[in-house]
Image 1 (spheres, rainbow, N blue to C red):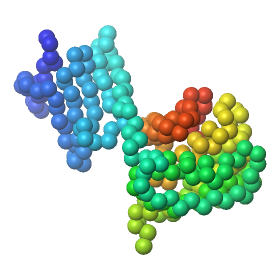
Image 2: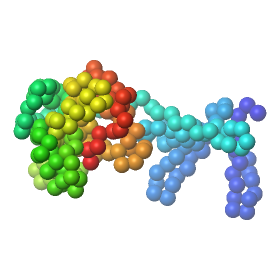
Image 3: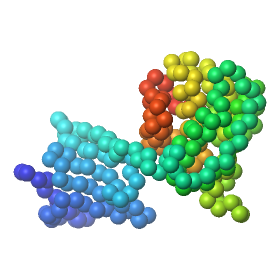
Image 4: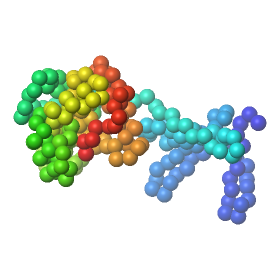
Amino acid sequence: MSKPEVYAVDADGKQKRVKAEALRIVLADGSELQVLLDEQDGLLIGTPAGDHAPARLLLRPGAANAVRIEVERDPVDLSVLGADREGSLDLAVQYGVRPKGTPGKKLLRLWAAAALEAGLDASLTLRVVDEAEGRALNRDYRSKDYATNVLSFAFNEGEAMPGMDDILMGDLVLCAPVVEREALEQGKTLEAHWAHLVVHGVLHLQGYDHMDEVEAEAMEALETAILQSLGYPDPYLSEKGAPDEA
């Protein structure tokens, strides 16, 4: 058998063979799934080709009636991000503290711009703080009584503000002692870790998140691609966990 045989089964269990190379399934909410049947040894399940799909499932029969599942991911498209984005960035940088190794304003701006979507105007404030201030902010706004690496506060949370349509507004707070400690623990250069956390925070301001495994994998892949475009290595190679920003 050179191609899979497809049978439609009704509620009574009656089967009817269907000549098809793909199945299009429309769910109750209007979203779609496609099952591609032209694979020689498995079924490829994903969303329509025109949609943004970070991953697809490939199902292959295995021994003893088992099913082997693999994940295929499209390369991350950076054309919607980066320095050629043609949007404006108004970035205010505040140093509550500035220990040795803290990046300057030009680097911070470069990293923030690299993580913004193409054409998006943004007005952001980035503040570097000590452990006491970082802990107080995390406690007051996140109910977590410890200093974290980066906190992001989106003013409009994705909603348009009067007179500020299509402008991303928000604050990033980075805790210098935590950033330095993590870089040492994870075997990274301090500059690379600063770059990672700025990119991570700016993505959060745009609505990216890592609340579940699928979201986390997509966000980590995007972070990695952005950082590599800036000349930094994959931030997750030696890191035990993702940034704990919430």
